[in-house]
Amino acid sequence: MSGSPPAAADDLPAAARRVAAAAAAAGLAIEVRVMPQSTRTAQEAAAACGCAVAQIVKSLIFRGAASGRPYLLLVSGANRVDEAKAAARLGEALTRPDAAYVRETTGYAIGGVPPLGHAAPMTSFIDETLLRYDIVWAAAGTPLAVFSADPRALQHAVGATIIAV
Ligand code: 5CA
Image (cartoon, rainbow, N blue to C red; front, side):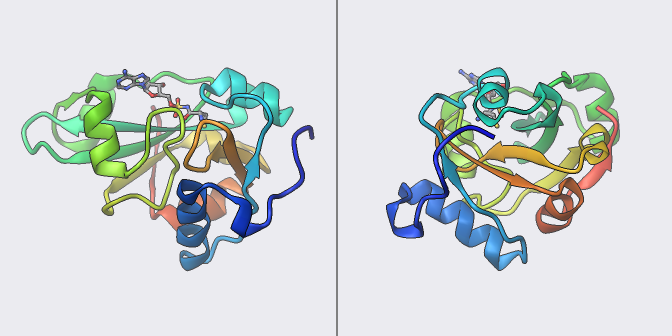
């Protein structure tokens, strides 16, 4: 694995500290790594982490078309969400929100949105293909920060329902 050694908690950006605290509160022990190169996209994160793109957890926010409420979909970096299929599973049509909505509902900017530690809890789902891996990597609050986890432990910590995307 490339990248910097784990940063001491005090050295982490505030957003990354929020993610680490939320993970700890949910019983998930993580070490946040602040990488020297961008992890803004799944491809960049895979290159920085030295893993397959499929092992990158994209934390995608969708907006319920009727309810206006946010949904979190944790999706493998190798997969795209079939919105019609997801809508059928979630029980309402979905729209792709703008960056402001993502920041409002999660508390993080796009490119750093983590799978947990959001401004408010939201209904969450996880792509079943992520569960095939021993280790997956997710954003830790900033476009340079990541953490690794056992996908099953991450699923439990988030309280995500397993779906096929
Ligand atoms: N740090 C990486 C790897 S974990 C990461 O956050 N990847 S991501 O896929 O979860 O976040 C990028 C996603 O944000 C894109 O896939 C896209 O769905 C969304 N996005 C990018 N730009 C915009 C935008 N302008 N408005 C709304 N959503 C956007």
